[in-house]
Image (cartoon, rainbow, N blue to C red):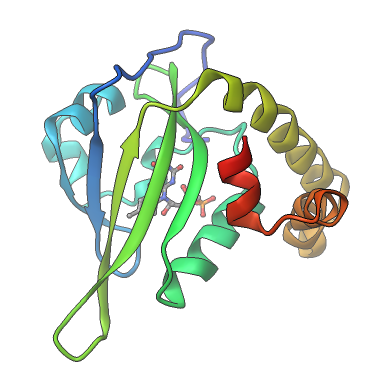
Length: 172
Ligand SMILES: Cc1cc2nc3c(=O)[nH]c(=O)nc-3n(C[C@H](O)[C@H](O)[C@H](O)COP(=O)(O)O)c2cc1C
């Protein structure tokens, strides 16, 4: 959670044809945001450009979800997830996100692009309790093992359902 911002229960909902787009450098520093990103985040373009992308991180999101995201995109793969974000006023908005690496001519990763669309409400009902369990597991573990404990919640679900991560996300 960002210091000074208290999360509220005020939700903003993406419209059917909205796409929220942002780009970062290799470290997750924002280099571009489209007008809808600016609108939903509640920050000005000047506040967003140059800020770390965790500026809109919501405390309800498990750390282990972002670890999985970074591991996936840093290894050159695309990543899909439902994400709860926090606006500048403390309100929240859910997205279905796709993050992919931007490559230069020699195939080196030079940054990342994320495109988010309106999430299915029925999927949010399923992923919210999973994230809650992941956050609980992270908090219950000592700091050194928090990511492993959070990730284990997902791994258990994948084992129970026999699905890989992407398959699981698309089944929601
Ligand atoms: C292209 C791109 C888009 C991202 N979009 C978001 C986002 O919308 N919300 C978010 O909380 N984190 C997003 N992240 C992840 C953040 O960089 C960060 O890892 C995350 O907010 C967790 O913050 P923390 O590591 O400080 O806990 C994005 C990362 C990249 C590379």
